[in-house]
Length: 355
Image 1: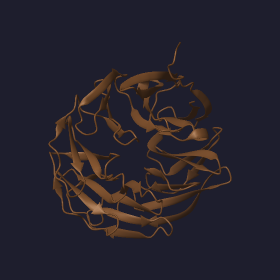
Image 2: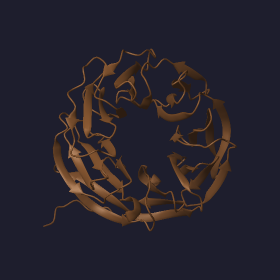
Image 3: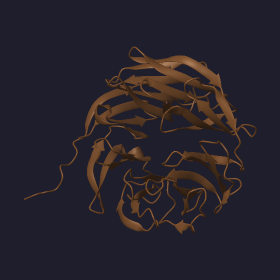
């Protein structure tokens, strides 16, 4: 008798062929049960608004090139003006997005993280005078926060939401900032080139994983009071790293140049299992639609989305979904939201349902 779990049956539920070159800035959100997707047009001043059935509408904002989009509550997206200084507040009005407000923040805002409660956000800027902004999401009032460190490359909140971490590429250190007091807790020296920081669940919720530029090294840090553990050399230079949502669950590293996906022990970063994946895979995300987490991989020019389960300590490919175009970024939702995939050069946005 076959007791294997049922395999997912992905189905394409909607598609928008926009004729536009799409950027990487995009976000998915749901209002009143209606999944909706927004994506910035590459190098342009407009947002493409796509509904659950694939209907699309272009919203011109009269902005310098736009970048990141972020879901900020039901029916609401925030967009950053990479080439300017503003944040744009977009709301669903009828079937599509509309501009409701905008605010100047800093020079070249480039990355946003939202606090778990959804009332505030932090924005990283290419502005030496104002590198970090705390944004009140109720009023859009910005507040400059001191951020010691040279050339911050990435920011991330720890799993507990108590500390905002900055990876400082120019000074080879990390800056933990209390989200309560907005004060930096000193600086933590690490190996050269920290450029990416990932929160890991479990314990007190303060453990962070740091990646280093052009290097297979990775460093674990146990909160703002703890010294970093000695850096570990991964199997190759990772292009993407994600953590499972389960406490003590693995960390997954995608080595796009080597065509490998690896599961790592979150305490020691030692390999647990690995599988071959297409070389130059474009994205890796952890999806938890119904309390059963799985990995989704877009294969770039291979034009597929792979569904990979973590079962009994093994990586298992559950499905390979043809996308009919080169694959870009993946944006997983929950339930009826489905999974959205962009094809940037093809100007394509598609929604898939996976059981």
